[in-house]
Length: 357
Image 1 (tube, rainbow, N blue to C red):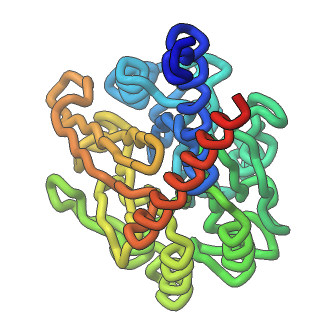
Image 2: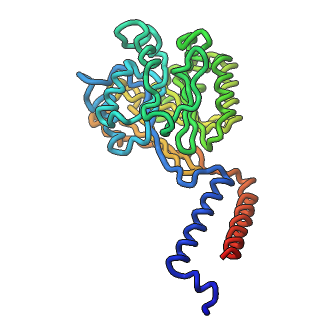
Image 3: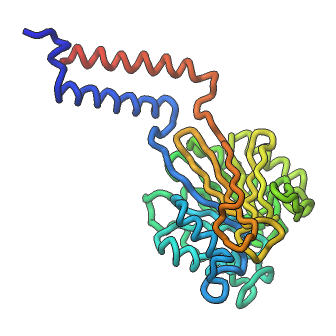
């Protein structure tokens, strides 16, 4: 009779080794909370207001060019637009015409979606459209799924959803208990309390927060243009600082915003702020037109910012910024203990399996 070790060769042995690998992967997920196959991307566009939809602006020189470039590069699982997308039905039309009716788009309320502040047929039309919009296009229990509707005042336009190993928070920064257009851009107690509870409840590995206004406005990364430097969330410094501290305490990877029409990416006290600039094409030549693509691969998160400097061909190849937002899924202090625990459990499993056979 052959030794026991040689009897394991061939197809049955390969199957057993395969099952061991599967067990190891599942054990890694159990120990670290990291889905081993988490691999997806999403896109970010903002401030394309008015230069969307059918008609005269259905041209590559405007928002259409951004969506064409995304389609060529890969638009990801969904798109999030942190504000100033009025009229929202125009942005939706452009996205659907190129990416399909099943592609999920998450619009965020900006100041120009407030009643009387943007392009609308009647006062309040844009905000009414956003209240009635289907933010869960693919249905219940099919990711991405909304896991937490917003507080009273803005239950439709503030919410959070999960996708793969990430948690996404959409904030209407004009919301207070009196309604969804009650402030001039702030994180008041009512909105802060909801966000604090939402972040405390999630168990996802990565957290991303989206709102229209920057917490700390920055000049454009390439030409230094400045806009809204003192009238963004920093107009209420105590609330802004409390908000940023909350993001830090909950290990939020990044806060995405718009408003300034200027792209920037800065890490502030451990939390990234990415201003997605504007996606208006040649409608704003004061700064390059921009979109972002964020890639999540297990415990790593990196981004690319594609910009066009208005050279007459809107291909978004003129300027490309890339960066790593998060490059470690397990704190260094835990890495060795987790590895030792994994090794102990894995070899215990192999020993028990051998005895059973």
